[in-house]
Length: 124
Image (cartoon, rainbow, N blue to C red):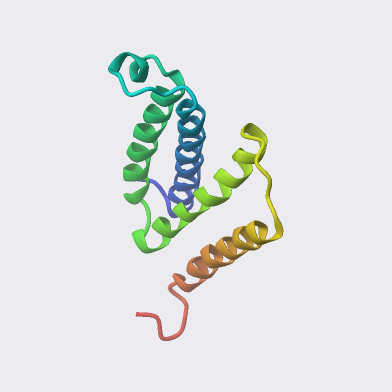
């Protein structure tokens, strides 16, 4: 069984995989037509589907070693990953509002992590 730290790291890795899948979906959408041959030969799209399947499987494994109330909010880091990946692979721009949102997500995830500590007085 995975430890809590291993589970957290596995969820973070999972979010990187699924965020990469979203970038692949975006790249694949540029040439997508809605016929079966086009879909099956669109390697970006197929790669995205594979990454999502691997990510989902790893997410299930990670839930074995930690609390869902702590692990699931970490999935919000996918917004951060997509922001970073879109800068490098899609040449998208980040403005101050987007950076503020990223900082707010990080603050929220950290708050949930601290709020889940068993030593918090009055915690249920």
